[in-house]
Amino acid sequence: MILIRLFYEFCKVGLFAIGGGMATIPFLNKMADATGWFTRMDLLNMIAISESTPGPIGVNMATYVGYHIAGLTGAVVATLGLTFPSIVVIVIIAKALKKFGDSPYVKAAMYGLRAASAGLIAAAGISVAEVTLLNIPGFKTAGLSQLFEVRGIILALILFVLTKKYSKVHPVAFLAASAVVGVVFHFAV
Amino acid sequence: MPILLELFLTFAKMGAVTFGGGYAMLPILQREVVEKRHWATNDELTDYYAVGQCTPGIIAVNTATFIGTKLAGTVGGVIATLGVVFPSIVIITLIAMFLTNFADLPLVKNAFAGIRICVCVLIFNAVLKLLKGAIVDKLTKILFVMVVVISTVTDISPAILVVLAGLIGLWAKKKGGELQ
Image (cartoon, rainbow over all chains, first blue to last red; front, top):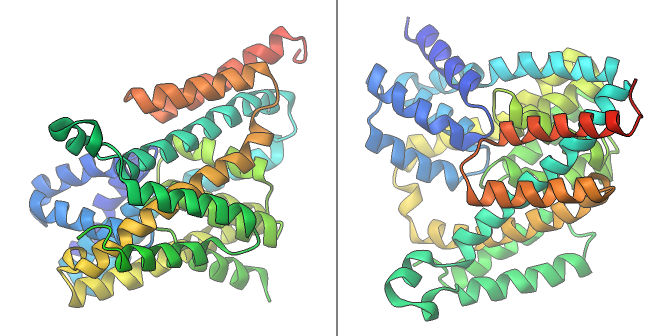
């Protein structure tokens, strides 16, 4: 039955894609080839939509594929399939952490892990900055004058100051304001 | 409000405004989970992200499961996870039904160009809040800088970096005589 296969295929993606939504993409490519449920071109369109909507990209992809295979039920089944392996693993680890969290060994490992985790998040921020604030293809063709997305950098600096000054304001307010700025000043087209 | 309902609604709220990947959820998590509800500390969030890098699954989902389990056991873990994916299921299904060219609409493209810049700034602010708990001495400072450089410049899996850092932490504490 297609729902069972849908659940199973997305369990596989959820199980092997370690480290974030982007890691699901090679597995989704394999799924496209193996099941014929969608083409690689469909996948590219889905990635674009998934990046433009709230929610983790992996979840969005599962919902989109599931919907196209089997309607709303398919959307739900695919998403549950994707999240099922990680729910199991994380619940086990979370309970273990609760029990052994005070052990000096765990604390020693966490001492190292925490520095790495902060580093990875900072690196993620840098890669977002690279894509949004720099124009690498423009730089390659037209040189230094094209390198910086000036309006983007100005917005970023203004946001940096405002978020510090109005630290009580919920991040969502700044996201909404940035969307409006993007539309008013035609940041993309 | 019963905790399970509050877990579901809080994580649904967060899932609904997380644009651009699991890291973008961090600033919202800090606001809703750490500052407003005191369900976890910034240090614990950093720990969950670290473990979430090495385990199957998407980081936003894993973090939801962690916090839900911490608050209300296995049931809490499941409910929080269902909460965080719920908005995506609804929104994507609606888009799939009505708007297959959603990503090409100029309004959408422009709005998201703005949103991405905001996400960038919010992530940096979030990192600044985490640094206090993550960098406590010279070794952690070095680890932090090395991880930033290595993951920006190379393709080395984040999971490997996290595991190595954990082992270095163990080795450092053992060498310092704090472990038996």
